[in-house]
Amino acid sequence: MVCDRPESRNAITDALFTELIRQLESIAADSSVRAVVVTGANGTFSAGGDFETIGDLGRTSEQQVAENLARTMCAAERLWALPQPTIAAVDGAAVGAGMALALACDIRVASPGAILLPSFIRMGLLPDTGASWLLPRLIGAGPALQMLLAGRPVGAEHAQKMGLVAQVTADPLQTALELAALLTRQPAAAAATKRLLRAAAETDLATAIDLEAVEQAAAFHRGEFAATFDAWRTTRVAD
Image 1 (cartoon, helix red, strand yellow):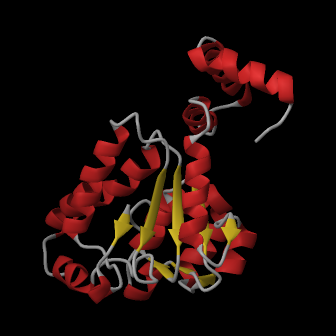
Image 2: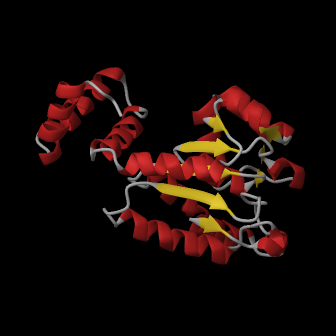
């Protein structure tokens, strides 16, 4: 999935959000898709909300703004909820809503020059597109609040130390595609693992173990288990 609006550094409009939601719904329903890479074209992940769109919201009634934002920003939830593993390849800037979309992916890889910029406070606005929910879950409530209130750019190296970025690489898109190719070769247990971790994060240890028992029992009875187990037992080679 590629955001490609070179004239605006891949800024996000209502139309782009609507198309993203359509694509995500299609991907979620397609079991042949085993992994998803999200990126921006032309050396920028996304400059965030389109300025003209933001300006129009300031001239619209509060109720209409709330309804419009709820309708479009759910793209982040759809991305987060995809059953397939997702990878954000971040080159250049990921600003505001663009940053939030990167956070909604399971894994982020970034170029050395990438930055994450929570620009909301600079415009007198609050975090949106799921950033208020996503960021604290990735780095904790205190660091997330500091990052959002400061509104300062976070470089790739610092983002990696914070746990926002898994890997810094010269070619994040190539790295993301290689990782996606690896994930597509993994058994169906890969998608089940993502589902299990998401569910376990919202509950206590005892319930998580019960969830593991149910998911593991299902894995034992999948057709692929016998072959993959025999290969592992014979070779003891992980890759």
